[in-house]
Length: 148
Ligand code: DQA
Image (cartoon, rainbow, N blue to C red; front, side, top):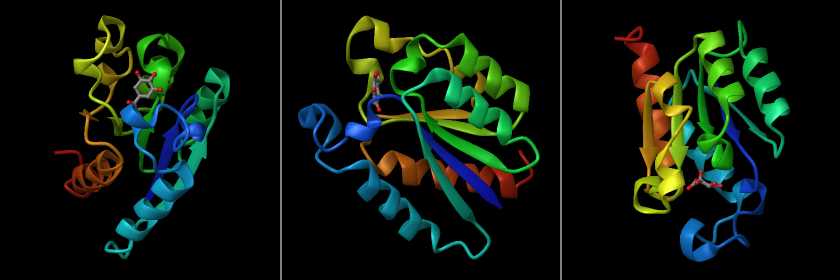
């Protein structure tokens, strides 16, 4: 089983960016933790992708077709604006879990709206970096039970 983990704009700055909101762990440390966690599954391969550009994220989601079994995405600021990323998720028809480090429902009003969550199988928000591991667990269970 192949799973792609996508991180959107400014998440490459984790560790230095607003640590009181997003924590002090860097993106590469989070990725290493996810990889370690994924070792408990014999049959799961993880790939990572980060981009600050909406078009590159759309291209990457499209490229998942026939190549990946599911996607975990933190679209970052594009969560609240991107019809293009939403349409790409819908177009590939793969199971996608949306993750946010912070609790987007407990912040500014504009962050409470997610364009992407309605086309995902679920959203995990507010659990910091652990949200990615929770998403991986849920996505793998979902795929293994044949999208039940
Ligand atoms: C975020 C929440 C977004 O509102 C914000 O624009 C981000 C990060 C999160 O992980 O909490 O860049 O997606």
